[in-house]
Amino acid sequence: MPAATWAVLGYALLIIVIGILGSRKTRTFTDFLLGGREVGPWMTAFSYGTAYFSAVLFIGFAGNIGWRHGLSGLWIAIGNSIVGVLFVWWLLGSRIKKVTGAYGVHTMPELLEARYGSRGIRLFTSLAIFVFFIPYSAAVFMGLGYLFESNFNMDYRLMVLLMGVFTGIYLVLGGYKSMAMIDVIFGIVMIFGVGVLLWSCLDKGGGLAKILADLEAMDPKLTAPVGPPGVWPLVSLVFLTSIAPLAMPQLVQKFYSIKDRRSVRIGMFASTVFAVIVTVTAYFTGALTRLFLTPESHPALFERKGSEFFDALMPEMLTTVIPPALSVVIFLLILSASMSTLAALVLISSSTIVKDLYAGFIHRDASDRRLTVLVRIASIGFIALSMGLALAKPAVIVTILSISWGAIGAVFLGPFLWAMFGKSVGKVGAMGAAVLGLGTCLVMFAIGGKSMVPQAGSVGMIVSFVAAPLISLVLREKPAATPPTAPSP
Image (cartoon, rainbow, N blue to C red; front, side, top):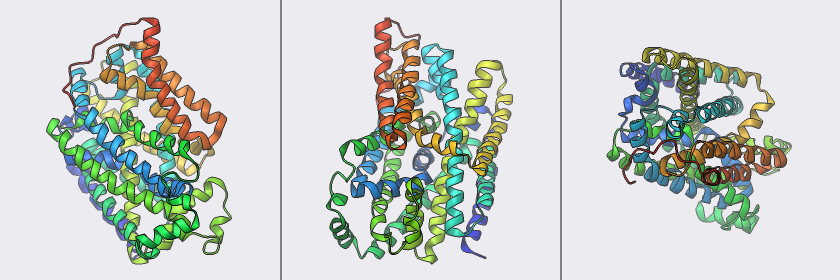
C-alpha cells in the first residue's frame, strides 16, 4: 500500500479520536464556537499559525513570489512574523479577550453591532464573510485536489471528498476545542515538513553559499534587498499579508477563546517562532524555483501560461527536490496546512450564518441548544457547498479567491480597530469605512486585474482605517457605545 494511503488512514483515525474527545467537552454554543473561552496558549498559538499560513502559501503563493521577487520575498516572511503574528498578539490579544467577554459576543459582526449600535454593519459584514469565504474554501479544495492528483497520483474528486469528510468529522463533533487540539498536531507536522523541504533544497542546490552564488549569477536582483518587480509591489505584498491579520475574522476570533493574559504572553512567543520557521522556509524555497526549474529540465512547465505556470511552480519543484522516500512528509505538510485553514473558515462562516444572520435577524430569542445544533448543521452545509463548487470548478471562484484576503481586510480593518481603540467613531463612520474600503478594493481590482491584487487590498485597508474617523468627524457623530476598559497590551 502506498505511503500516502497509509498517511490518509492514519489521519482518519486521528481525526475520529480527536473529534470524540472534543465532543465530550462541547455542550453549549460557546463551547462549540470558542472552546468555552478556556483554550490554553499552545493550542491557541498553533491554531492561529496554522490558520494564517495555509496550504496556499506552499502551493502557489511562495513559488509565485519567489520566481518574481527572488530572495526579497523574505521581507514578506519578516512582515508576517513580526507584524502579522507578534504585533497582533501583543496589541490585540488581551484587549480582544477583555472586550468580547465584557460584551458577551461570539463573532466579529456581533461585536461591531454591540460597539456601534448598528444592525446594518452586522448584516453587511456577515454577508461579506459569506460571499468571500465560500470561494476561499472552495479554492483550497481545488488547489489541494489538483496537487494530490499531479504529485501523488490520487483522484481529484476523491481527495476533495476526503478533505471535506475529515474536516467535517472533527469540527462538527467537537467544534473549536477539537480544531485547536488537532491544530497542535498539524503545526508539529508542518514544522517537520518545512524542515524536510529546506534540507532537500539545500542538499539539491549544493549548500547555501552555492545557491546564493547561482541566483546572483542568474540575475543580481534575485539576491538584492528589492527584487525585479520593484519597491511598490513588494511593499504592497508585505502590507497586505501582514496588516490584514489585525482584522481577519478567522484569526482574530482565536483571542475570543484564549484562557487568560498569561496564555496570551506564552502564545505570542510560540506563535511567532512557528511563523518564522514556516514563512522563512516557504519564501526562501520559493525563490529557488528559478534554479531547479528550467526550460531544459521541465519543458512542459514552460508551455503553460499566466497563472497556470505560477501555480505549478511549487508542485513541480517539490517533485524535483524531495526524495521519493520523504514525499509522504510533504504530503502530510500540505494536508495539515489545508485542513487547518478549511476548519477555521468553516467555523467562522457557519457561526456567521447561525449567530449573526439567523439569531441576529430572524430568531433573536433562539435558545443556546438550538444555536448549537444549527451551527453544526451549518458547518456541514458550508463544507458541502464548498466541495460542490470545487467539484464544479467554476472560473468565478478563482477570481473571487484572488481578491478575498484583501477584500475582507478592507471591510473589517477600520471598523474593528476603531472599535477596539477609538472613542470617536460612530456607526455611520464604521459602516462608511467598511463600504468604502471594500469598494476601493474591488474597483482597483476591476481596473487592474490580478496584477493589482496586492495594491487593491492594501489601499482598500488604508481607506477603511482612515475613513472611519473622518466620516464621524465630518458628521460630528458620537459613538453609540464606549469600549469596555481593557488592560494595556
